[in-house]
Length: 220
Image (cartoon, rainbow, N blue to C red; front, side, top):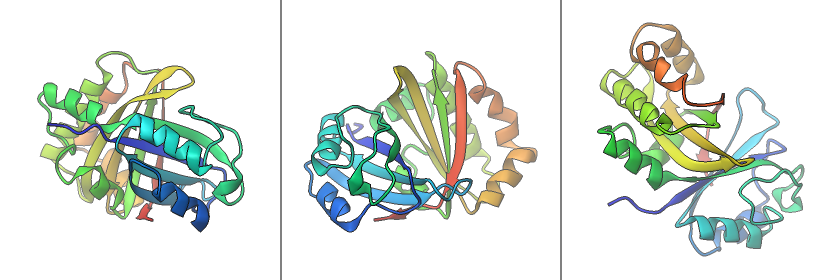
């Protein structure tokens, strides 16, 4: 049975991890599980803080009570002094279990249970793919894409995980993370023949827009 865990991705307005005092306070919040941090390879001035929580309620209250965001909203562009300079550029809250269950119902195993999302973030490079304004059926498309890549993995592929039920500016958001041996391994894989090129059409429909970047995460 899938758990109700929730994963929060927060883009910071600087390339440094949260201050030690803010991070310690965050870890003491009820429902906190673990935290990862890394900078965008395409934009070293933007750090990405990723945290796991036992529920959406504990995630939002934990961030609010620790001072990392000024309110309990799921997205914030307001500065937060506790981050150690700069501020929070974007905060997205995802129900990890919801995405895994949806993919499982579609008959996909993908990377949802094969090592889990934590092993994906532990890869030397993590591709972070985000779809905004998604329509019904998109998560199933992502599940089929991941299943096909799992079945015929390209060189350097380290698995994938999908997060759903995110909200950004009132629209539904889905995020997929894929582990790679390096950023170059991903670039080579998507340009060559194989499972990615043969199934990329699954990601090109039922969504308004997409964003993609790479991060070398480390657990805090």
